[in-house]
Length: 330
Ligand code: COA
Image (cartoon, rainbow, N blue to C red; front, side, top):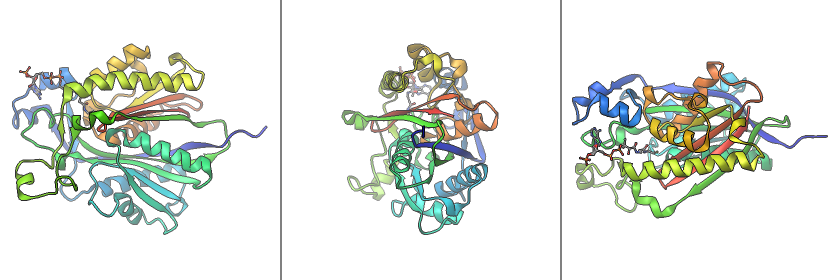
């Protein structure tokens, strides 16, 4: 019997930003404390990119690592999907710069995808659909974020949370009984105002006034986002396992968006998957938005924490509010 065509992750990679900004460093910038940040978020430090680095540089590095692990060449790629809310430029796509930097050929279609912290799950889902439809065979999905350039360093509600970085995977069509089992995506568009960068787009173009008022920086209603995050991520987790006729017990590893330890503890309690099965690195990176899942995946993968046939549950939620899940048999 021939098995169904699946998209399988065959390589992972990451870019680790060079500078470390500790909670103690932040105490010098805003009225906060190491203790407050650790207790409320689980974050100890975050990494920031140096001035000479753009989102596409981090993405290209992560993708090169993923290609190397996959045993693929840049020219093998049919598509580069780049999740980012911090593109190199408004135009063209960051993915096009990534294509140039890795030296992939013109037959590769490269585009960005905007789903904030859910960008990697949305990208994975798009890649899976292209692969399953036969339109693409080998696809790169990247999350790359240089959030430090869009941060109001005087706003303690946001500046303590975020960090820079990139992660990438290479997927290929495979007839083996392994790979992406399902993806689910959702958006509650009543909640667009909870998490945003107000200015710099067509609604509120950049002007001296918007820049002076830091309106090109992230604004967030943290408490509200937190509430929805626990509820929506838990529900997406249950949908992912139930769709595949599985239970939370079957999940070997949860690779969730690394926003806040307490959010993940809330999800863990609700869906009854113990915290030991969650990959956690937010302590050292903070929230790297769409990059957080592929970075955590790469670290777990290279640490030998994922075995063949393991069931991985991916979960993410971010601005939109958009969220989603992916269930993968490794
Ligand atoms: N240091 C010290 N105090 C701070 C602070 C900081 N960095 N940030 C906020 N506070 C204060 C608030 O001003 C508030 O004071 P008040 O009661 O006098 O008004 C108090 O701490 C509690 O604020 P609150 O917002 O209720 O805290 P919280 O427990 O909800 O934690 C977040 C705040 C941001 C850590 C939390 O809401 C969160 O993580 N939300 C989700 C954010 C997220 O992950 N977003 C991205 C999703 S992709």
